[in-house]
Length: 443
Image (cartoon, rainbow, N blue to C red; front, side, top):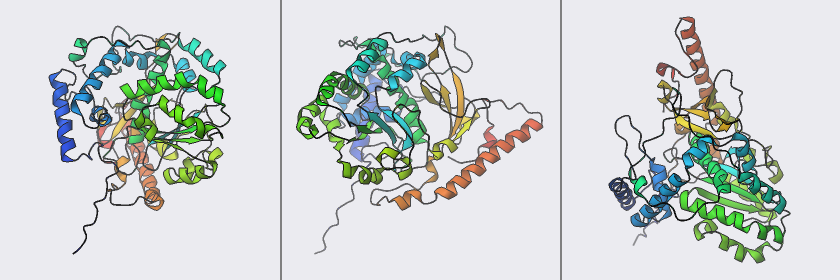
């Protein structure tokens, strides 16, 4: 009698576009429940939904598709966002305070792993008690500039706000105002890092990037420093799991001191079980081989045996692939400025054929800023979808990169030449509009 071959497990099971029939039904029922409670407004015509599918599904995945539990957490999180004016915090935080806060938490290296997930680096040794205390004193005076009374022609138009949020009771747990900056940093991941990562060529482009990976370096950290940081780490873990569920992919702990295995038993109690399950502690000999399984050598930091020049505190060192996807605005420096950034649906014809816009937001000297930096060309669908029964190899990931790069350079040159041609014909093509007819790469 022939044996039945075991079915391949889909590593993306539970993610958007990889739901099984029961999960699809649970997701549809979850949306209907939120609609009935006036907590979610679906898309209608040209109107965007109040929340995108990825954000909603993260709450459902975090509760293992328990609709009632996911609704309760979602409603509580929406009330928390309302009570702490999270949208306003991200839009109006002082850009210099934002930059200062980045030193306290994992920082994006500007690179992605082999699946397209953004890689962050966290160095714990600099966070001594004096530095943490000084930061908290500074953070208690965080500057959030409110929005102007009247919106300008290029101001961000937020999705509609559901009425049901107003009926929710105020959150009973008060959040330390010093943590407002942390919220801005996590909004940065949701509105910038995840979106620009999703636009890059990668396996499984049908699944939006919604998670981040972290390399945590705990070299030269003593037991006392660990203990002093416990409240800092616990606050972060609790608040992020409550309001940004399922946004962590993996954490590799590197440089663990000799005593670390002994104290790991009580350190892991600072975090919820789901977070602990995503943490791996690597010995010195395991670091480079493990990283190479997940990350191309060009995107691994030099200090770990790779080729990436990046130190803790540096600005993101954008990969050539990401740089090539950016069509910078005229007169804008070709680098990411300090402060919060947001990827938005284009407000003009550039929104078609996979183009989005990158904006610098936040505030400086008490005035909100809103500067269009670049148009982002979505190249995510230029690779074949990797199905679960296939084994992803480095050769597969690298295959065709040269052809894609040549195609993209040609597309950018075509776009630039066409705009120049129209200008020469007396047409008004400004920095905020790229004609629909000139989109060079299909979605």
